[in-house]
Image 1 (cartoon, rainbow, N blue to C red):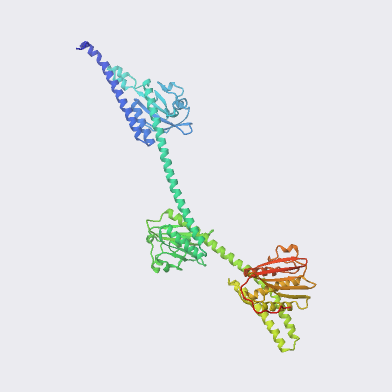
Image 2 (cartoon, rainbow, N blue to C red):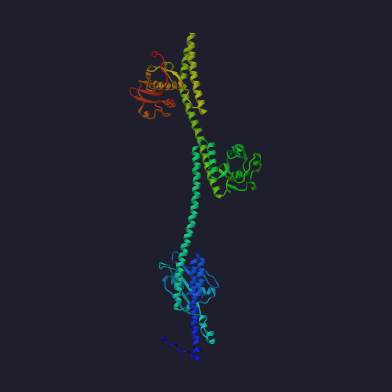
Length: 628
């Protein structure tokens, strides 16, 4: 048995007296249960909503309900910590409120980090009634607490207004007293604790939401950046591939064909073409074509402005038509005449600087439609084509200018070297005039005709060079005959001048070179020696073999080459004599170089020697006596 004594039962009068107290206790317990349920709901809701706006709206609704308040406002601190802004305002009106930190009740709480609980707002000097005046609302009691994150830093403020007093009226049974109670009452100390707990929980969740949204934003930015980098990488790869094709091509048509082939492949298309403006500028000529219909379309012409390609070139802007046949700009008549068709088409103008020179079109993408990324790549390729055309034209112009300049130099050299055969012809003509011997006159005629052959060879050389043909006329040469003829011509050219020519043939057999041009070499070298010896002197012509080289030397016993001229002997227009053209030694050097040989000079006060070394292949003939 238990020793516990049961309480004595209450009398009916005591039961009636205890009813109000029991009712009040039951009502308080019910309110606490509701608060607990709301706190649980707030926690669950806050952890399930990542969107910040939705989170704040939910938070304000729950805080208002939980605090028995008329309305609530949540302020967040700006990133720089100078301003509070109200993301959500709950009540009849939604107002966007911005406060400086330190301004108003909320600003003071954000600045100080302290709780403010005011029974009558209009009695507090920190309160700003301007909002009430604008909205018509009447603020009575205020409870405002700071929101702190995990680090304890203030990140915002939660403010509740006008605590409802109906709950207090429900505990009173006197109807007169209930009717006279105020609709609102001050916030209690337990309200402060509850709001601080809610604010702390909200701060953590808001921080997490901001972090989550920040991560999402950074991920989205990273995805955009990655996509952009991939697009740029693809574009750079296209440019690299096109540049490789340009480097591999040797002429414009080859460059265009290679670029087009690479563009068609990289853009995943089936066909394409590059057209250049005609000289008249009124039509486009398909210069290169890729695809099944290439044979039909190559060299075809389309009027400027006709078709999508003509439109793009005329308007100087790229175009896409993924339903080509339905586009009014599509060249249906041209397609019908050539037996071709296109499902989808891109076209872009080709510019050389600011001048339109043609266009490129890509047809029939294998998978899907052409898009803006494809069009950007096409514009890049069109730019490369423009550069290729510009480079090709620049090369052609430079080549033509170089050729004209070379022809000019060649003509100057020919005119320079014509002096020798003309002098020889003049000398033999004078000998003929005073000779009655028919046989001797016949020999003079042969010598004159030989000089005409030399002059004719010079003329043919100029014409061949103009045609781009710079080959040497290398053939078998008998050295004893070659030197014999050269010396005879030189002696005739120097007739009447105190110049003695002596020959030392160390090699008189067969070799191979351009006889006419090497004859010009000996003429120029000997004439320079003679011109340097105004009072007369000796000129030696020597030949010998050194290994696999034929050596030809000319020497004199003149005063030597001036020191100022020695470093640029073989340059054009370098001359050390009055009235000289400076062409002779430049011509000599050019001819020797063309033979794959070398020429050197040894000069001093006792004379000058030029040594020529040429590649030699030949055989020795029978011995011939030296020419004196």
